[in-house]
Length: 349
Image 1: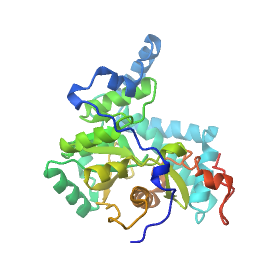
Image 2: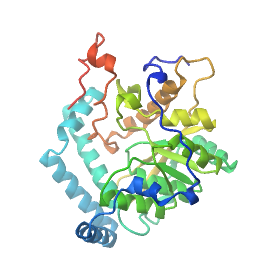
Image 3: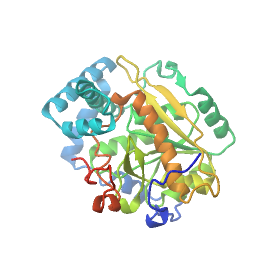
């Protein structure tokens, strides 16, 4: 396979810090505080506890009805609606305007479901959570076989379906996880972090992530990371995503090069009907370029994994986060001197 020139050489982009960190069980409290942030004040804590209690008390059908109401309200009010429709117009020009609006409405519903399904206490899965089937059985078998050797893998997902519950599903299926997370302040992030820990996942802070991922893999625990978030240009490589260059973290590819373990894309597709049930879709192992095949193997490997994510999203576009300004960061060369056939390099608003 030929390597596409999709970005400037990685040497022009600083990699995530590789400082040493102690093992999971010996990390100081500051580690989790950096991820969770300062605890909310007493009033906010009281109000949010009430919200969490309500979501926990509601039946799956009632949660789904609430998600539908919130999604319809957010779309009607126009919250990020223009962003979603602009993204869809550029990513899927072959779709009619009506089709793109339907996809956008589905994306709002997907995000609302993530919130109401991920925040309750206790078991958030339906009794038949493991009976939805697996697409990509050969890839799934390869992942399970690798984990059985006592080494972790690198698992990549997107803001698709319910990525929080997919992580929980993998843990229940015998794939120990450490989630690479971006610190977000506030009661919502605290709740998500607490639920991740309660499900058995470890948390990896971005600073020092490569070393932490390496340590986790050597302990037999896989790293689980989202690869569809825009990053500042100085921290990213640029790879094609729905026909446009998108700033993307090189952490996965750097970790793959350092550890030598395989990369798999894992996505959870929600079938119709209420209840937090998802069919697992797996692709992989997605191999890095062979030695000497590419001038920039890190960017090429990132592009290959991103292409696998795009294939899954194209099959179920209504389950991806089109509300995100995914292409807002462009390579400086494109912004200052766009190539023929490209737009002026200005990211969509």
